[in-house]
Amino acid sequence: MGPRDRDPVGGPKATINAVPVDRLQRPLEDLRISVTDRCNFRCTYCMPLDEYDWIARDEILNYEEIARLARIFAGLGVSKLRLTGGEPLVRQDLDRLAALLAGIEGIEDICLTTNGALLAGRAVALRAAGVNRVTISIDSVNPETFAQMTQRAELQPVLEGIAAARQAGFAPIKLNAVIERGVNEREIPDLVAFARAAGCELRFIEYMDVGNANRWTSEKLVPKTEILAKIASAQAIEPVRRERGSAPSMDYAFTDGGGTVGVIASVTEPFCGACTRARITADGRLVTCLFSTRGHNLKSLLRAGASDGEIRSFVVAVWNARDDRYSEQRLAAIASPQGYRPGAVKKIEMISLGG
Ligand code: SAM
Ligand code: SF4
Ligand code: SF4
Image (cartoon, rainbow, N blue to C red):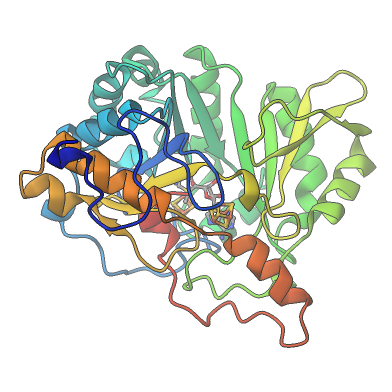
């Protein structure tokens, strides 16, 4: 055994190139890469404030650094990448990064999560570069509600982004809608009608307490049961058998054959047991849970000249030590006499995490 096989931070050793598993026996399968913490929207549930402690430009990983990390993760068995942020399309030349990632052996799937506002001019180049799927966030198809929720954005460019994605050949196009009590839950049937007409797969997301800035309370949560009832009031649905264990969305088919709709019930039906996702923040920290309070500094390894083997061993050790199951613990706390205190710990904000 050479020095590269040694585990730098303790915990069980993993064989090089074997898929690492964590303490709850969950393999490392997917990697979400946040390419920026900046965004052209200020969605009330994600990034409500005007100013944050923005990551300094030179602290943000460059594309070569991101690609090197992705190659190391691919060597550990990761085949699916998701580019996210912040808003990934506010970063220049994202298609150049996509091309670098698409050239990595073992990477089979590159997905982009975007608010869609800048997609119209970029969809063709991104697809040509190797992005093969897009998920576009759209919480309302009512211009007033959309403006209220995003605080500084208009609906029309997003609609144009969805149309451009379709023209560029992305299929299926997924749409994400976060539902917030008192804001857009009455618009669930309209979102369903829009997605069906556009031929997109819509997924409703329960409002989560990611970070602390959104001041989440359980009163703002619209649970999956209520979301499903509202969908069914517009269009009959039936459950679809899950294809893939770790997919967070519970899917339902419209009984008239008009496609599917999903609900990501992270709060009321947590899926931590099947969570195989790692995240890299824009400043190069490895984060093992959406509700983590800290990340593990990959950038300092990269910039200190660590070898691929050293970085790989670090990643394996972090993953081997992972025991995150925040959403399951939150559900238990909500049901306990003490209740749940969402602001009790300082979590990393969604803008730097990458949703
Ligand atoms: N800017 C891009 C976008 O909005 O699609 C990518 C980053 S965004 C953080 C990724 C996803 O996280 C979006 O679909 C967004 O709606 C979702 N999200 C953000 N804050 C959330 C929250 N508090 N609860 C549930 N979903 C949230
Ligand atoms: Fe920006 Fe996406 Fe967060 Fe909205 S959800 S503020 S678009 S990062
Ligand atoms: Fe994964 Fe953490 Fe979400 Fe559970 S709470 S599903 S461990 S990201």
